[in-house]
Each structure stands twice: as C-alpha cells, then as structure tokens.
Image 1 (tube, each protein chain N blue to C red):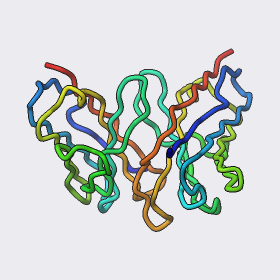
Image 2: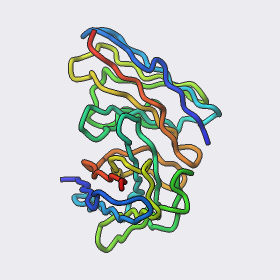
Image 3: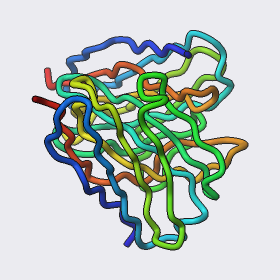
Length: 122
Length: 107
C-alpha cells in the first residue's frame, strides 16, 4: 500500500547534526513532490521544506534556511532532511508528506508518514 | 511571509452540530489552500485541497469554500470521530505556511 516511513530521529545536543530519512513505497516516488513538516511540543504544525519531483527545486521555511537541506534519491525512493546547527527550538515530531501537485501548483500532502521525534537537548 | 489566522481557535460542539471554521490570509493566495485534520498522537490527514475539492475518501459532510484571503471549512453534521484539531495551509507563496489550528472539542 502507499506508505511513507520516517526514521533517523533521536536526542542530539545543540549545535550538532542529524539526518532524517523518509522511505516511500506503493507509488511512483519520482512523480511526486515531497514536504517536511514538524510539530513542536504544545504547538501547531510548521511547514519546513519542499522538494520538487525531480529534485531540482527546493524551498525552505525561514526558521531553517541555511541550516537544513532537503534532498531525495529517486533511485532509492527516499527523501532526506539534513539538519545542521540544531537548536532547542528544532525539537519536534518531523513528518514527511507527499504532494500530488507540481511546480506550477502544489495541492497539499495527501499521504503522510507516522513521524519521527527529534529532541535537541544538552 | 503569508500569515494565516484561524477562528475560532477553540470550539466546543455537540454531535450533529454544524461547524464552521474560518481561515484568513494576510494577502491573496488564490485558491491554493488545504485543510487538514489531526488527532492526538497521529499524523495529519488531508481533508480539502485547492480550497474546495474534497480529498478522496473524506466524508461528504466536510466541505470547503473561499478564495483570495478568506476561506471556510464546514462540517455539516459533527460526528464523534470529528473531534480533532483542524489546520489550514497556504500553498501559493513560499514559504508555505499553516494556520495556528482550531481545536474542536466535545460539548
């Protein structure tokens, strides 16, 4: 069935790095744009980044630009989020989501992973 | 960045009630607005996209309307499984942003 599964979360010290992965199955991975979204404890959803289906276009939230990098490997059906210079305020559950839209129009995430928890703490 | 506001932020309602949630954008976003439902401990799920298109598999009691800067999500007859938090998201201008959420609770 159509599925996204995140991994790579954990506890990390401020200033360190972490890489999240999102493995896809059940659909043609290279045909979809993908988002990362996070939810901090007690807060609402925050959009983090998007990557186009071919990986050529990437956009970020201001809160992570310059520190986080979104990428994908269409041969491995996997999405990544490289997170550098982590801060306490990056503590959240991170979700990946599939978007059936294109660079001309994105529609929203119709398939979501279960989330992976990142805790930034000394 | 485009700011989205939702009203109300909290709503107490009974099964069978008609519920309307409003999402307002700080500038026009055409119809590039999505609505999501999130229950505790679960990932969000897509309800509505491009403001008024019902996602496949979502019950027809959910509907969306609006364009430009004002949008609404309506639940025509609230069911027990609808008690959750609802978010709007704009996908017109980067960075894409979410509204702060509306929690729908049992009266």
